[in-house]
Length: 514
Image (cartoon, rainbow, N blue to C red; front, side):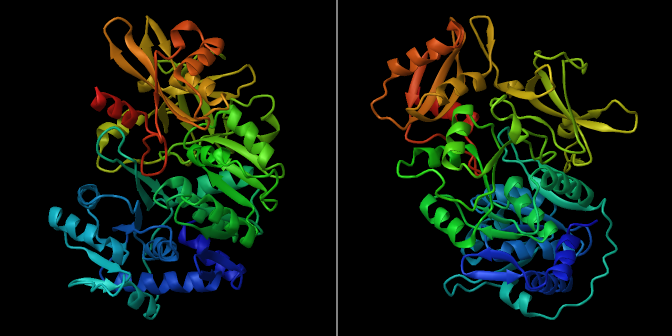
């Protein structure tokens, strides 16, 4: 099945049902599908053809949702781009994927214009208006594109065509475009909605950027099921989001660890203050067990799903909720129709308790990185069968005796100190267990004696806490060589565009301060 058929099928089965809520805008499935169809016709009239790459450079608005499905209806590949992206990075993406078009918002046109000066590629550009701003020559009016007549587009696409090109955050250099076919997307969406037990009655609130695959799949999965998606621009004002959850009767709430930390810092929240929530999911980084415990206290009716994934395959593992009490530090088992196993440096499977690299097999594994064979060959390697390649995640894991997986750290994050190897995640788990610490990230800095010195950057929820208090807490729970040598206090931790705490940026801020 192709992804645009998610919308077409739901429009046929649930035409009058609310599909999308964004601000004051509410679209039924019939309206959503019709709008995407009209926009697809305008794209085709503007020269967009099968397999072209078209960027969606918008925030979480109803126009972005319509744009994504319109691109797919036109037979093209959607390239969601974070609205905070700067001109030089946008220009790189335009040139790298050889984009044929951009769908954007008027307030972002200055960035698009600057990017076009850097990368003067001929593009079909459609933009919404913004406070009366003139769109300029060669830029189509988005609303006019939506108002046109829908015509049949026979693009002859199949499910092994590219549906999405999702650029990574670029934490290790230039962003890389992850290639996902329609078949990849359907496999991932089917697996995830199966273990979450999603139904047509779910109402899912998403504050995560649609350019972030975790946020994007909230939309795709809701549409596949015929559920309702509520889009919000961000989690900057949590109380407003909580009000929205109450107003809409939201049942599903995906979050990332930084959002969880914000919630847990709020002092005026009573347990069960959002009774409509059926489930809460977390990915991007593992939630500390202490945070999971406090979330369960605040949301006693909601099932908490601790998960692990990466853009290159969308989702890898989930912890069955019944196991939370027994294995709060685990990210669980492979998602349905997926195999996950741990290997050593020679690619051989390791026994329980031994750390190694996590490998993923499944129909949701990416096709590779766009125009980057070197990076592709590093991640996709021959699998156990001669006809397949499997995904080497670059992440270190171990399993327990029953096969449940535990995240150890990124291979390149391991700190070598005093001749020992330290996983930053293990130290961070201890830091997060302290009730006076809201967030923490651990890095290693070069040290002439130790090799690397362990440094912790922390955000406090208890301003009375001192460096000595934190080191004493760590010493009570960690081996001597794992105790941080230095504690740096911060008002906030450096994060990527998707809100994930960045170890690389944290290291750069410390190096710049020296």
